[in-house]
Length: 591
Image (cartoon, rainbow, N blue to C red; front, side):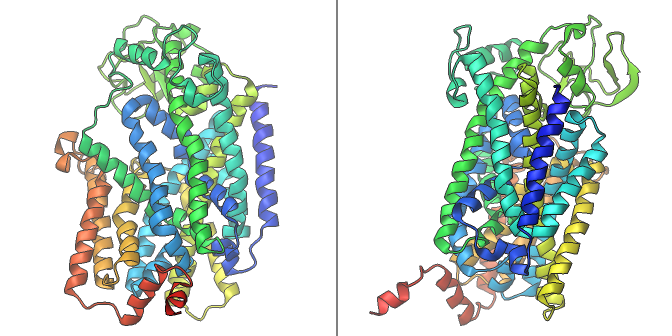
């Protein structure tokens, strides 16, 4: 059987599993729909949280980022895993004790204000839609390459799959589907890594293989450093970012993770406060399996790619290369007309993605219209590294197909969680809490399901017709979460004096500041201005790290304004104090 047949079989089996779970876990109440009835075990919640968190960005893109940036890519490992330490210690147990359904629900009640709730809803929608657009596009790319269908068709299939288990089960269906999706994606991620580690170093443990000697007796990282320097790149194990920017990016990713609404809501689904802390710890363990393997896959795939394409004649290039050309994720331009691929430091293209013509060159290559004047002839999108890695390493067809199933599981699991946040923000935080407080449970459930349908259609349109700025903004959703939610939540838990005026001002100013910086330095201003260069960064801070500065501004604004305006009522302050005190302490102290 070929790769396509294997892919249809494995994707069909996994989708049948997801549908079966969705029908089994149908939601019968709003509590089931919003928080899975509050009865999910810590183990199941840990697995579901890990799947919810490990999106297409983690599965497909992270190893690709590290493969191209080397040492500098460690900020993603530290930031994204460190965020779960913050969640486990500072947020999860307290939010669970507060006992609400959503992040805007917590902010609206804690700050005794529908205005605060509305600001939180808007922030949740901005973060969730920018994040989910990338997931749907990732689904389309995987379907396009492995199932040989159009990207648009792939996105529509992904929309239909998510609709089934999100519409029927809400959080209940999503939770148990995500448990299955975690098993699929981690198996799909680890199997090729183990295969390639044995193939290149003889070690069955990828994490050890990365630091081991290869079959030629040379340490793999030393070999990759040498390959890099020969091609004019900086050594793979050297860093180029400033210490401040590394710190800023890491902290922004940490607090952004701790502020993501689709991650936080998972801790409302467990029965007890201690279960929230347990499930956060288990989620970190499950996530660490993938995150400690990603650097190894980055090293293996980078080494294999360079050795496969460097100075190779296009006519002799493996079939996988020509297949991936059709997706636009890899391209070759024969600038010196020698028929060989010259892979050197520098941009092969003027734009970020290749612009193909319908013509073919004399070697059969797809012709590019936006080649740069730099001598580099090869364009490689970082997203290719994980998906094409098994093909580059010549692994069995079923392993290649397994990676496709894993990529879909990762994208669909996160898309479902994000779409639920969008749905509950509308049905619960806008309709139930503000517009129609007397709405019945059944009507609220209907509105939640209608909201899911609308959100999926919008997300699908983003995937089919991605605006130019979305691809750049998805990676910065963490900065938005850091700049908006994290200060409001952390101050809401630990500062009794924090009031609605401070929280609203902080969220608005932090979010607007982050959006402005992203637009000016990452995307331009909707075609009016070009993105400003690195030399113009404020305080030497990259857009990926600016969430740290926006968060600090939010904190300062919140604290200052809260001290200049009336304090919350005694009832609100007592409520804040009560969520920090373990159950039974007051009774024990009175005896």
